[in-house]
Image (tube, rainbow, N blue to C red; front, side, top):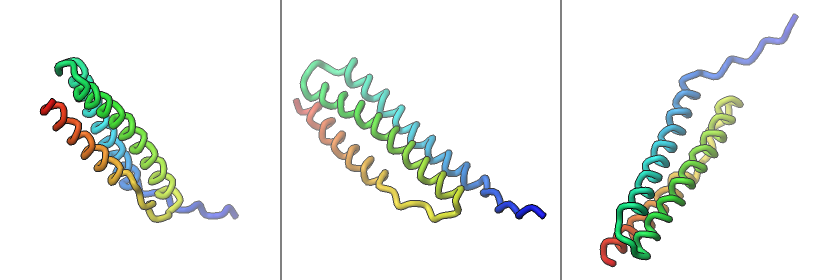
Length: 109
């Protein structure tokens, strides 16, 4: 007699994880659009270049952090473990605060 297979993962958890990943990607695309705007539309000064470069880095970082979080959560969901404690949100918050300072500098300079 074959061994019983474990219960399949509830698709609601996987879909919620996917929606969270897509939210990270939407945020990344928004930061990328802001970077292109800052680099092409603002006047040429070091502050605008710093803001544009910071937005580009933030877009890449947000995308990578979102993908990493998705993979960790997906593995935990499939194995029936608790979701890992993530550091993604504090990282994104710090990056956005730095970008706020750069945006303020670009207005003042």
